[in-house]
Length: 262
Image (cartoon, rainbow, N blue to C red; front, side, top):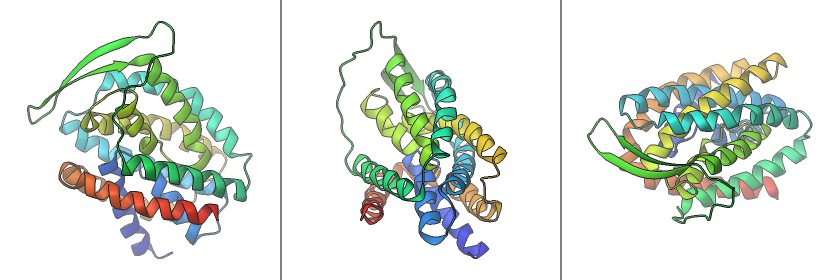
C-alpha cells in the first residue's frame, strides 16, 4: 500500500485509539487483514508495534493532563507480564481461519462495549480483596474520587493480557471499559491509565514478535508516522467528541466483525 495512504490511516487510527483509550490495534488488525495477505502472526506483530507507538504518544499527552493513576497501572502491569508471554505463544499456534473467527467475535464484543457503557458493580468473589480509595486531581483542577479493587483488577489485566497478543490488539479497548465497569474508575482516568498498561504489555509482545521476525516494517513505519500525530489530536478532542466517536467506531467494528464471521 502507498506510504501516504498508510500514514493517513495511521493518523485516523491514532486519533480514534487515543479518544477511546486504546492503542488502536483493534483498528490496525482488520485493516491489515482485509488489505494484505500477511499471516496472522505478522499481522499481530505489526499491529502491536503500531499500538505501542500510539500508546506512547497518547501517554505524553495524558501525562501532561495528570490523568494517569500510576499505582493502579503498576498493579495491572505486574499481572500483564506473564500473560503476554502466554498470549504470544498461543498466537503462534493459530491458523488464518481461526484468527479471523477469534477477531470477528472480539470485534463484535468490542463494538457492544463501545456503543453502550454499562454502569454496574460486580460482586467480589475473590477472597481477601484489596481495596484502595483513590483521589486524582488533573491539570485543570478537577478532582476524581473512586474505589478500586486491586485483586479483581489484576485478574482482569491478566485475562486481557493473554487475549491481546493472540489477535494483535493492544488491549486498551477491552481494558478501559472493564476498568470503568468492574473497577468503577472514572472514564477520564481509566483511558489514560489503560494507555500505560498497554505500553508495557505492548513492549514485551513486540520484542517477542521481533525475535521471531514477525513484524512487517514496511507497513509499520508509515502507520506509526500517522499514529504519533493522530494520538496527540485524539487526546485534545477526547472530551468534546468522545461519545460521538465511540458510537461511529462501534458501528464500523460491528459490521467488520460480522463480515469476518460470515
